[in-house]
Image 1: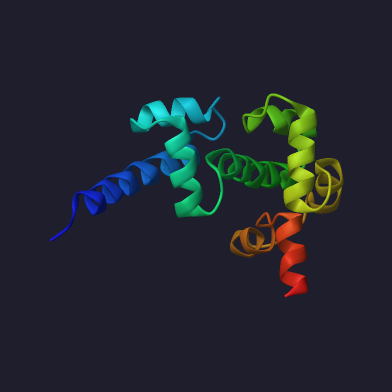
Image 2 (image 1 turned 135 degrees about the vertical axis):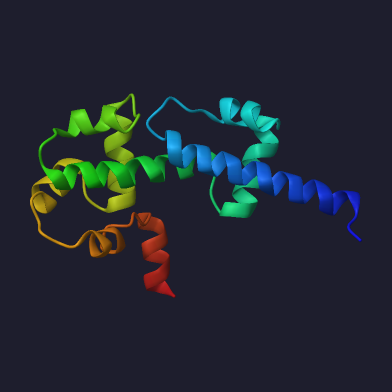
Length: 144
């Protein structure tokens, strides 16, 4: 038998999964924690706390990671400018986009585009080797 607390946690997990799926689908749209929380029938604070507890990062950090992953794929194509890619993935500030891209990918988007554009690598390998890793997380792995 489950308790009321366990039942509420299960309901919250379903809601959190829906929020994560929505972020994955709609990453290029304007999304904020308040809108995500309204869609999940949760308060913004509760959504943020539970999302971090379950997925290890805030909804905003997860959204930005999805955007940067997509941006990296677009930059590898080489046919779009960094500014075009920034707006195509749903970022409204080129400065914030560049800072976050550098944080996650280790190089600025312009350098990444120059270095990676036109490379011929099977997509399954590309996804594996280009997965964003926060610089601080990478440093922590090296230290351990």
